[in-house]
Amino acid sequence: MDFGVVTTKEGNKTSVWHYFLINKNKNEAKCKTCQKVLKSPGGSTSSLRRHLKNIHAVDIEAARHSTIATTAQGSASSSKEIPEAPKKKTKLTHYYETDANPSMQVMVSRMAAVDGIPLRTFSKSQDLKYLFEKTGNKLPTTADTVRNIILKDFDKRKLQIINEIKIILSDEKKFSISFDEWTSIKNRRYIGLTLHSPNFARDSSFRNLGLIRIHGSMNAASCVKLIEVKLDEYGVSLTNDIVAQTTDGCSPMVALGKSLKSCHQLCIAHAVQLAIVDVMYKRNAGFEENVAQLAELDDDEDLPLSVLAQRLRTVEFNDDTNSTDNDEDGVEFNNSQSFKYNDLLSKVRKVVKIFKNSPTKNDDILQKHVRADFGQEYSLLLDE
Image 1 (cartoon, rainbow, N blue to C red):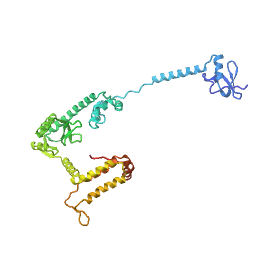
Image 2 (image 1 turned 120 degrees about the vertical axis):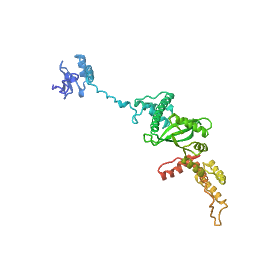
Image 3 (image 1 turned 90 degrees about the vertical axis):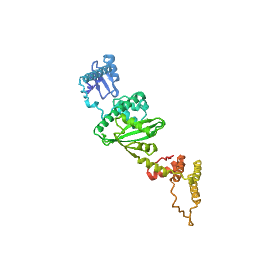
Image 4 (image 1 turned 180 degrees about the vertical axis):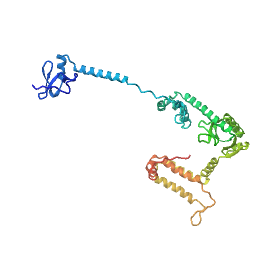
C-alpha cells in the first residue's frame, strides 16, 4: 500500500489527517496508531472521526471547539491591554451660546415664534424628540413646560433689548415707532409695537417690543396710554425719546397723531392697498343682472366645456347688444365711462369656478394647456 501524510494538516491536532495517512489512488486512509485501513471515499472523514472517538478516545470536534474558545479569550484579553484613547477635552467655549451653537431654549422659542409650530407638537412629535436627543437635548413632555421655556427665553431677550436701548439713550439718540392693530383667530385684538433706530446692533434697525392686548373699544387716548405703558417697560419715554410714529390711516390713528408732538407718518402701503381695493372691487350696478345669469352656470358644471363657453359668450353678447351708446356704424364710444374691474373679476371668477368645481375638466383641459405653456401645473385660487 502506498500511504502518505497530508503535509498541510499533519501538524494540526484538530485535523483528522494528523492521525491518519492517506492513499489517494484507492480512497483509503490508514490509522497511524493501530495501522487499520478505513475507507475514505471522495475524501470523506466521517468514518475516520468515528474511529478516533470510539477506538482511541480522541474527539476531534471537542478539541476544535476548545481551541476556538481559547483563541477568543486570548484576543479579548489582548484587547483589554490596549490603552483607550483619551477623551477629548471640552473647551470652555463649548458652554457659550452662539448663533452656530444655539441652546434648546433658543431653538424651541424660534421654532414656535418664527415657524409657527404648536407647543403641543414639541411634546408629542417623536421625530422632534429624536432630533433633539441627537444634539444632546431632551424635549419636555408637556406643552406647559414648553411654554415656560419660551417665556424664560423671552425674558432673557427682553433684558438684552433693554440693555441695547440704554446704550443708545446714553448717547442721546432718539427712536421712532410703528404699530398696527391685529386680530387673532380667537377674535382677540392686539397692537403690534416696533421700535426703530439705525443704532441697533446685529445689522437690524428695529426691535419688536411684542403685542399689546386691547380690551374693549379703543380710541386715540386709550391707544396712547397702551403705547406709553409698553414703552415704559423698556425704559423709553413716548414724549421725550420718540421723534416719529408710523400708523395706518384710520380715524383713531389720525387723531392719535394730532395729539402727539412727534411727527406722524401715515403708512403709504395702507393707502395703496385701499386705492387698489377701491379700483378692483368697485361695484357696477348695471352688471348685477349679467352676474345673476352667469351664476346659473354653477348649476351646469357637468356640461361639456364647449356648451359652457357658448353660454358665456351668449351672456356677453346680450350685454353688448343691449347697450344704447352705439353709433350708426355699430361701434361703441363712451369716453366718460370708466372701466369697471369688478365686472371683469366677476367673469373671471365664474370661469375659474367651472374648472374648480369639476376635477375632470381641470385635469383633461385646463392643466394640459397650463403644462404646455408653463412646464408645470398650477392650482386655481378664488379671491372670495
